[in-house]
Image (cartoon, rainbow, N blue to C red; front, side, top):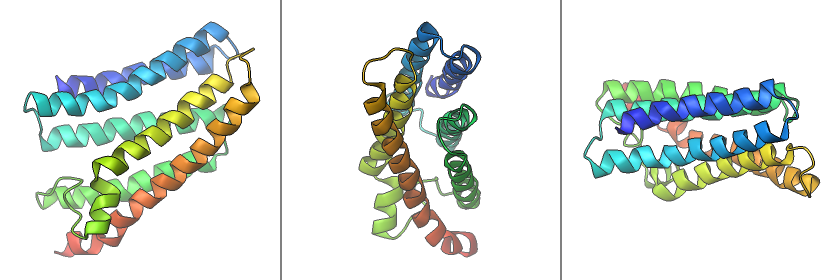
Length: 194
């Protein structure tokens, strides 16, 4: 069930992105896209809860969750750049970070480590694997994506204020993205050669 949720949220995200891209400027489509975006990110928390609740935790499930996170996150960054809402640097940074960390985590998986158990240093472990940091990063992304979409709904009141907050949430989310990658990079040599 948890793996189904992980995959299902990807399809929800694709439909939300279709509504934004194909229905440019349509208020109803953008409102639906906003709602679907919120649902897609809510399902990210639900899949982990279901996995723990029904003892469905597995390495495959952890990889599927990370894969789903990457697809959903990168798709929104790319959409926003294509729409001209954000600089191309946002998706380039997110995608590059994903390739680097996922490559290192793949090496860790070959040694029997899960993506978040590869960290040994307590500070590195906190930054990459703590519940607080994972939730904080998720909230930063969700806030950025939701506010950016909301600001683009035609005739929404206070669009400029919503946009400004959404933009700075996006900057914070990208900075957070890079900060959370550093511990993986720092401990890569130990994992790969160890």
